[in-house]
Image 1 (cartoon, rainbow, N blue to C red):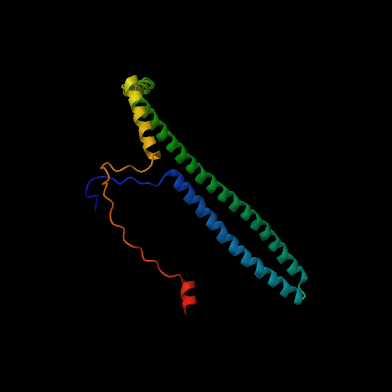
Image 2: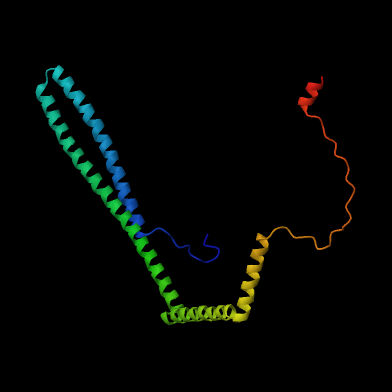
Length: 201
């Protein structure tokens, strides 16, 4: 059954991904081979020991030569596995580098577009307008600060001095005149002191 919408789905698998997959498969096959050879070496060593016990020294020697050859193959296999892994790492790192370069390229294109939108002339014009606005505000502030005459400044200082003197003066004197009639004096009761109480008792 064909694709219902007639669009072929684009594969995200790249040639580098396929190469990495093949290299890893080869590495895994070599490791399986390594495992088989290691098991054979163990069996051949056990067999050589048995042949020596049976007195078949020449047969045991031939078997050990064969074992030695397999060990050399095993060493070469290990070297090949290391080469495959190094190749995989190199490809993967190169992919990372390519992504970084793509990111830098996108960023560079974005910066270029932004520079086209805002040229150096535009930046200079905006800075000049900002400086003009600051200068205009400074002139307004100066006008407001210089709005008072010298007479106004003197009056403000006099009022400030008067307020300061009021804070130093004694309490205000009552504004209404005091009456001249003296109220009758009421006798003040004197409480006896504790010492007098003790003496009386």
